Length: 213
Image (tube, rainbow, N blue to C red):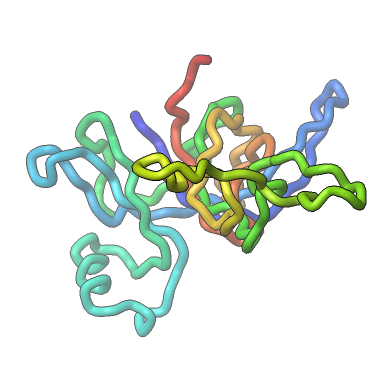
């Protein structure tokens, strides 16, 4: 059964094993989530489950959203995300999903929006090497040549060229992270290593698509 849960990144800390080994972990406030919609191949062309997370006041919800939550028989939620499934969903509308949906040792993929870095040059954004810093050099941190001046179809900058621009603020997924601890009583999941986004960011945790390397 495919599993997933929504949560909010709290921050990073560290744990020690019984052998004294230090493990860096990210603490995620995971759930409780509620199932707000189910989709099947017969009705929608594919299988999925939509989960909601985070309480919100009724006055913050517009009429279409209010009707959507009323149909599912749940209270309005702040965030709703969809998880694609291979087979027909084994969930029920209004079902509550807690942190114990995962167990310690399981591998997961965590999706979130990476930290925004603003406008960045090619050295910071793409790892370019800088030029000589001597007085005679006129190219210290510039990207260098970006194309030929030939006429016709080749005299242009091709799409995908690595150049300065906005860095971060993109949907990012880190795969094969290990669950260190899942605490359903406090709605916490501890994931080994770092996950995308700043503190307080919404993240989605699901089964890894690469269980075996």
